[in-house]
Image (cartoon, rainbow, N blue to C red; front, side, top):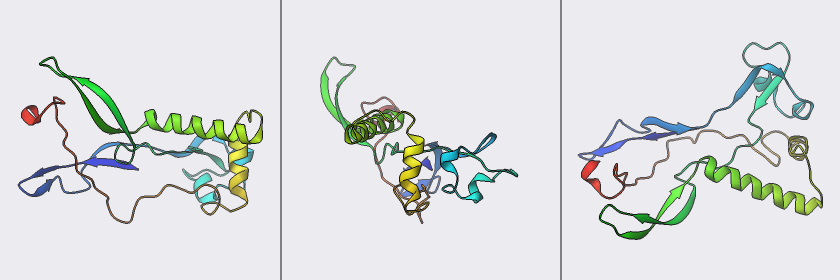
Length: 165
């Protein structure tokens, strides 16, 4: 998935939506690593045999979480300004700074539930999905929306006002 950026100029988005690539995440099929046992019969061959592979290869990532600042977490903080004032502000944050603690929290809840450390989580996660089938079980593939989604926000280059935008 990718996040684009456009600027509203005289009532028109420039460039037209979805805009210029700003950030995103990646995934794919390894050309070096064979498919691990926990991915067998769960990851479809259409993915595991990509890149001209003759035997199933490892597909990554195993888990992806919300990292988009537009749908991220609202964070409150105090900000120092150039004239010396300190003011409270709020903004959305995403990326690894959001996804990593989300995963750590889910893992902590899982280990608390089973009552012991689970070690490498991948076999357990894939076994949970096996019962429902790929994209119908515990987890699902991340796919692009049918049409671009957009939200508007003020991006100030100097973090204070639009004088340097």
